[in-house]
Length: 520
Image 1 (cartoon, rainbow, N blue to C red):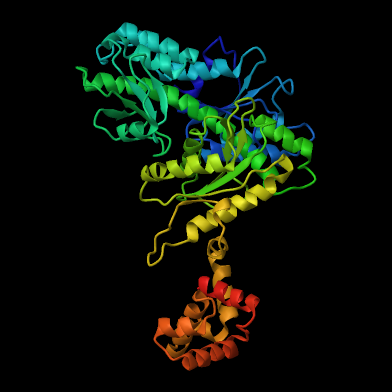
Image 2 (spheres, helix red, strand yellow):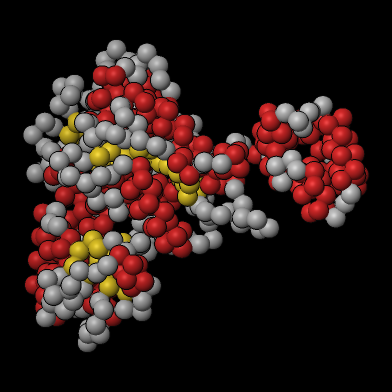
């Protein structure tokens, strides 16, 4: 479907405000509705952008409209459909910005809903299956017609799956997420435990629903029993389910925009981040009155959407919790953050311990879906009120650094890819959360000349110090462990004290040097 096709539809009553032939013949790949000032990171190339212009105010300068349209151009949007309801029309400054950036702009009258535009686009993309010739298809014409109507009506995945396989006798069938969540199942399919479902995702009887999605966001069509169905027919069923999946991804994209606004308020408190503003942001994310809140931060590859998808998929397993997943304004590439709330009235304890345990059990499966890319995560303790979310965010990022830094003895591999603040109960664990550059600097300055372990004498003294501290300052046990005379141990420790300026008779100096050794 092309942009110009929308103008021909009397039911939508759209008006072209600007657009030449090259803009109007662009093909539409999808639709995204947004009222973010900078929606670029949530758009995909070829999409039609719907905006009610809530983000714009008549008092705003021209630069604000310029930034909005520039973001559309950079993301590869094909056109902007601007609603007239908010301002009684479309601001001329926005039309001029679209002209400069080569983005077609159409106005949407008050009596035309954005839902009508979205349904029209996707119904056309699905091909209005009932009108297409039957020859190229394996699915019967009446089935295609029914599925087309169900997709347009936004039916639930259970119904869509059941009707897709009804003409086959409704065999047991599932739609599974990448980590084994059951998205949908037919009435003949018994409940499938998550562990078994995660294994079924890789079975030969399983077909990927949306291969273009990230490894964490994919859905899979699984038929546990062999059926005499042409593979082509199963692929057509999978494509129908893929259209439903893409609609859910569009909703998630909109939710991520709201989450980004919430995270911005949490990360950089300012005069604008009042309790009322924070409350409104939580409400927009569906998290109002769901305290205590837990924050989790994850980091994977430089592909931002992949990490956001991974965290979203993981949190869907917390069935009694609401959550909002997005990116912090200062996030590094590949980093995503979520605020998890407690659903009221469930009677379920979804505090930090339960949340952490659930996610730790799931993390290996999540990691296996993209095994070449390490996926690390950090979980905060519960924040009792919205005002303490800033502290919870700090905790989650510290725990993330700890998960990324700690190593199993004698290996270069992390001991765990997910850490909770409550796990950091030892000095060693605490230090892993400190950035590597800071740890290195501390070790160098605390150890002084001994930090130069290229010197054989210094290596010998460091070994003696390590054994001495490990044996709680016992001269006899240190001498025994090193096969030395006690007087030799005394001499070496004195040398350590002289070179570091520390007194190992003092507990605080022992702790300083122990921390320095751990930071090496």
